Length: 514
Length: 124
Image (cartoon, rainbow over all chains, first blue to last red; front, side, top):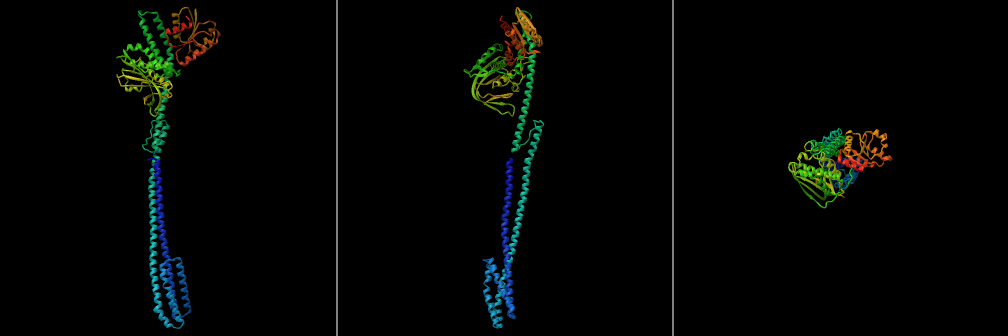
């Protein structure tokens, strides 16, 4: 899973936990507040009822005492209790306009008040006994009923207050437990997720750090082993690719350094050899000129001359390999160049008993190049082909074709991307039916000093120099072989004149046709 | 009699050239300068030359400098120069021809091509 996705899920989880906590708090809080409010209302009602009860009892007691002793103080106490009751009713009504129990109680008071006033009037008219009788039979039972009703209400309200209080307490506990559970769950899950996130961040970071340290020490072979398919995996892959490229570049630089050193050495050796070789060749040819073919030393002199000429050729190869490239380009007809090259090889063809098969496309677009260098390449390819058939004869096929297409140049070394070059190309194919090239050799044949010829037969520079010339001309040499004793094909590919897409490749590059 | 000045430091080459010229061209007077100090003393100016055969790479003086000095002296301004080198590069060829050489020949050469150039330059 990608780091971005992990972070997203982690944030989503945290948000979910917070939302859950919020929901619990809001829901639990609302229920708790409602229950608590109900509890308070029940308590208020209970208090009011108890206050009413107290005043009614006080009212009844005052009236009772007044009836018995007829003290004006008791009447005053009764009236005060009555006024207090009225005020209390009004206050309760004001706070609870729709209170049913209050309405029920209120229905008793006009009658009680009327009966009480009647009793007071009887006492004022000195009808005490009648007042006592009527109070006992009519008024006090009403008081008793009212007080009984109030006590019933008191019990109900007390029960309700107790119940609502209990409910609010339970709700607050439930909400507390729920919030605690969510917090605990969030903490545990968050810790697990954070640990996973930390591991998925720190572990690859450690590997990357170690990789860069190893890379910094020049350990190009060190690979960062990260199989994860996230950003770190991609980073490790890119890093490994970069390390591989640097390694290849370093190897290339070493190779170029070696080649440069070899080139300088070859150039120096060639120069030093040419002076004594001038003496050997020149003196031999002077002696040859002074003798006749019948002379006993003539053949020996000819052998010296041939050996010197071969040495000249080898030294020439060394010089070609080492000398800086400075080429004057001109328009060249590949068919004409191939024909003139064949003239030089005619004797070799005959002596090797090789048949020639020409398939030249005419007209062929010209190429831009140095004729002598291109001829050197053709001569090298043809000489190699003849040499490959020297012991059993065969057929040398020379073919020229041209086409317009995109060619993909592929560097066999890793890390160098294929390069596609579109344009018109001329291809000179030199095909033989000779000994062929083994799979082991085919990847090395363009390397300097690599040769399969017998000692003294080749310098190992021909194809290397030829490849260098082909590259200098924006082209390439491609080789294919069916295997040992099944012949080989060399394809010299050059950009036709006006082809804008010259390939400027590196060393040891093989070309594949797209 | 054709006066030929050979400016060459290598013994093998100078002996070979001497042999070739003596064996295949008649009526020549061949003289040799083997190093830069002998060229710098200027004694070569005292004679009229029909041909100079010049090695490009020598100790003490380069063939390019020799060529320029020969061309800058009125008495040898038009003397044909055959330049030789064991280090055959396009750059060397261009440079020596620009310095005033008449022909350029890479070592080791076959005596026929050498003689052909010498004869053409001597107009014989």
